[in-house]
Image 1 (cartoon, rainbow, N blue to C red):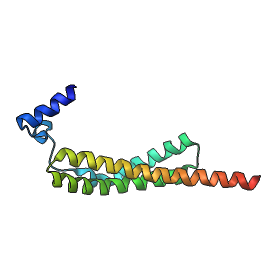
Image 2: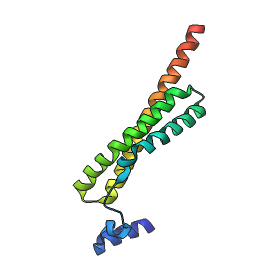
Image 3: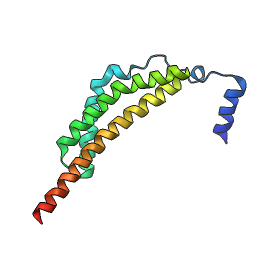
Image 4: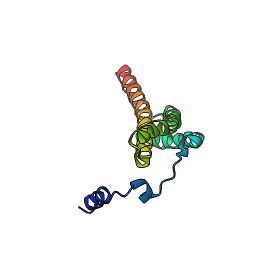
Length: 125
């Protein structure tokens, strides 16, 4: 109920959410894509260790997915943010796209690894 009061207060008083939250008008996520690639490599390694699958396919998919997401996320986020004139929407959509692309690449790697493990088990039988 508290969040509902805050939201209705913004609409009732006409307070601009961007000014209230003090967002900067630039989204520099795309400028540091190499750092995102390295972080994606690390995420992919931990994901592979957690799933107990081959490490290399998960590492490169994590790195490429996180790097690609960091390049495409701000573009898509800014398109929708400018459409609605909301910097909050830009940030939310940008980071949602980054996470979705990373998740798709890691799921792709997990699917391929599990499929290969099942086919190896069937050939042994």
